[in-house]
Image (cartoon, rainbow, N blue to C red; front, side):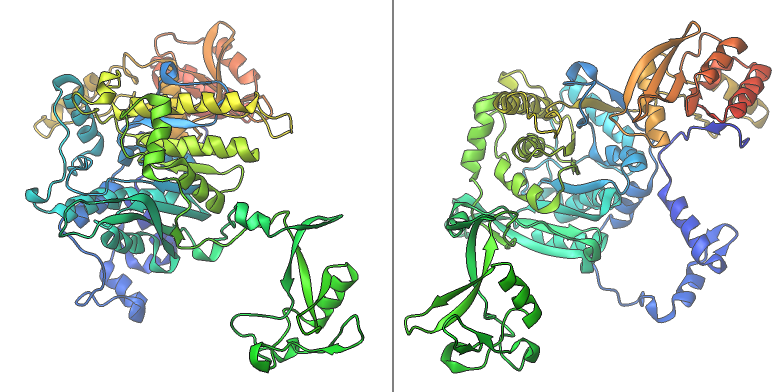
Length: 635
């Protein structure tokens, strides 16, 4: 391939090959005949390598195949679904209908290391939950076959019942590749929060330890459900679910404190020209509060009555102050020190701390979230009674967003369900002026027969998800008064909808029974055109942009240049970032191609078949692009 022309890759990155390439760079002596010599690698690692005879970890039948499912490249792409979108031209939010394993692969190119928070509420594996139909052939074919079954034949979705065998293994095999791919998307300071019940919490924690590393475990949070479930008198009822929290890198993990509640706020009952404040005893309390622990923090202070004050703990032991003397003097000069007398008339120093910017530490027990019944009422108000059962509370996701995001973070939920995460992101953006973006992925799982959702006209859970985002966004926008003339930008309550589909470009498929002398003609017959007949220019462009590393919310518009219909992708300055000519049936002239180049885009994309076999025209185009320092790509 010439350095002057680039070919768009036909699949997502092959992670096996990329890993081998990284090993070749780090330890070239472990690469023999373009293969990794595992024995040599173990020798080089010496004592750092595990003894394969005695290994600690989580193992189950099908684990190796599950890992391959994550590593296998995909030909899948996303097709724009403008009709089911909202505010397509302006929104930065994304909703993807399709299998989340393949969707996560599609997202790898652009969103690698860009997602600040992943929240998921996967199936809890109670025996009644749907478990995604991975069968470890080609993942996309599995998904398309499954969706055809439910859409055309109306087949019922299977569950993972304990009676079917490999109960835990099936669930782990479903979760493992998805978590592997999800980790790649997190920023270096990003985190993942996973809701789970006690059915699989122990297995999930071991699985997350393997995928993220035990050293990146942040915590396990018990979340009160507000009710007790389980009516069997022989069982213990369940009043809590769990959140497992892991960081991409614990070394870079910096959680935000939580907003203060009304009880916390009430403590700030004094005010000066700096604002509302409370006071904190200047003597150190709690652990390591004795003089011998911090001798440099034991010193004398002069009280307002002229007496000398030392830090004395309960019972009379020598304690210590909170800070060194220099910091005390600085606070005293700023009017931050307050002296108070106890019941015996002795003076004690206190330091002011102000309400503004104040947060509180995150605990591992949350009982301040609205219960499941109230969460169901929220969804009922939007969608109708029983359209979606057991939705997650908006308050739960908002609390997570407070802890784990900045105001401009990207948030991903690839088990979207009723789209509570999208609802919470929009609500918090409204409340704090943020510009967080959300990405939702939801399988088009059919709604149960004769259910309230089906009777209300919803054929799939994905339809329920999109409708909730639409209605919740409209309600939030109505309350915002159109948002916010505070410079924070318009409130984004829209979303771009996409559907997972197979590639729009022809694929080489050669069977093993073809005679060698007929191979060349067979290949030519296989690829009559580079793109699918029913693919629109927007379908083709979306796939190309994804594979070249662009986002799902680029600003795109049709443009005409010298009689040719093109698609323009604009950069942040409003200039042509990309110009794409995607009509394989109309061959452009050299002058028309010259006009495209003269428009000075950063990149030009042309379908290979648009040249219609004219190598001279293609060569001239390469030279034109090179003369103007424009990247030329074919697809």
